[in-house]
Length: 66
Image (cartoon, rainbow, N blue to C red; front, side):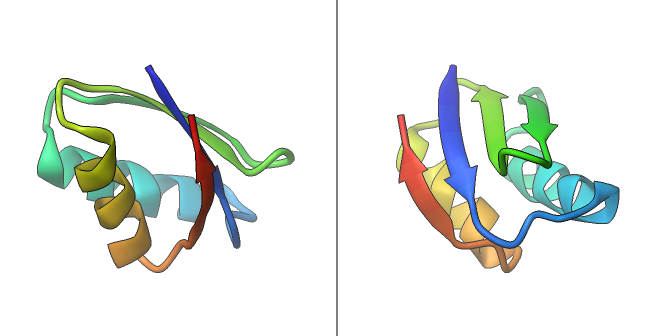
């Protein structure tokens, strides 16, 4: 599991946009997000960099990944 700190995620619409972006890279990815802490957890076989690029491509800057 990879965890990202994502800037600008403030509502369920944001969560949906991030989820769709990640699943465009890996349709089998499992995404969970916590809006108050702006954290996104992804279970995927795709590497961290590709997932981060997908999130950022959706318009949500990634502050940190672990």
